[in-house]
Length: 174
Image (cartoon, rainbow, N blue to C red):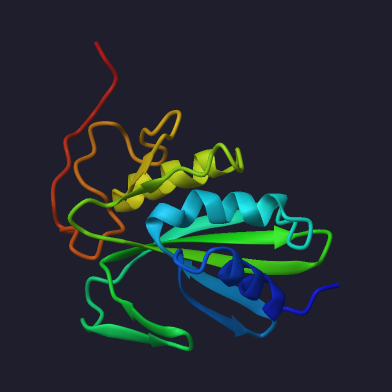
């Protein structure tokens, strides 16, 4: 079984320009990648026998609107802070190892590439992220609301969403 640091080291060696930062915590790797390198890194994690991350166990997003601006210090350098971050949690059954892949997303055009071609389970996770945070996934086969109704205005997990906002009442068609 590989050492926990090997996943992030392999990714960093394979994609030196695509990796912004790496770190380990309690045996799990975290890799922060550039949005343009996401699909390649994901395919590498799935297809490389030394990683074999065949399970996408979760995907979510974080809104850093109320965090202090500036730079986030990481062990492998300084990463510019962004408004959003998409986080993928992967698991290798073969190596009993987890890896977290983070992708910073700008507020001006919140979009990253869809990972549904790599892991079909990403379909539902990405739809939930779109619905709750408003982050688009380029190439997603069916990006539409999952939890809120189609007429719902806004994305309720954004930190700037007005919680007192009135939404249109939708009832059965008569």
